[in-house]
Image (cartoon, rainbow, N blue to C red; front, side):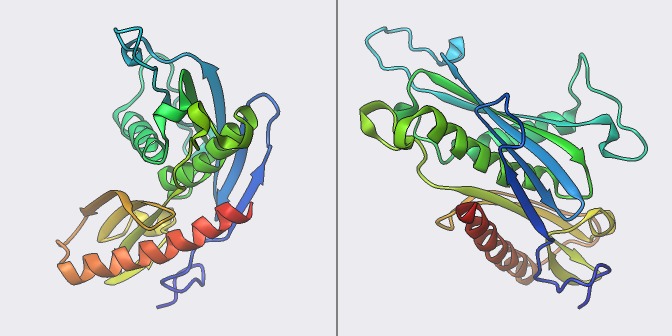
Length: 241
């Protein structure tokens, strides 16, 4: 199958990664997947949320990692309304996904009494903004950890990051499983799925929905194979940069 942009069914969009895009955070990454562009920044702050702090002062504090997500007004057409006093349900769901994905590879005991916030701001949206945010967010997280903690090691000399994490979309378009959907494919897909995995190949989250006809187990396995192969490629790019 040849797709509308000339890609094969198992081919990623062109991926560009620029580290150190802004100077005001401990780490920043501009990541582009095709026409989707996301700015990911990571900020390290001393202390943890009050609910995270043990009541018993003799118990060691364990750190925290959280994610924030936003689509800037000019990232879509027509203009997206700026979220001022209330975050919509989609944004909340994506923020939670980003946070869960990044926390899955962090040793909180090693992080100690610190909070790392990874902000993912979509500059231009053309499908896959949540998965691109996770892939770029991990790079920003890793850069922030190495910037603040010598050798990336925290309490007791233990590594703070236990693995890498990346994410990709897959789906069924015109009856064919395909990898890394852009908006035109996502909006017409019979099945839409997002997959988050560690660099060692373990699943963190699988979000799949039949937009048209229900899908069977063989289609599910085909999509998971595509996702795994795509995430292997993304992990290599993360390591390279």
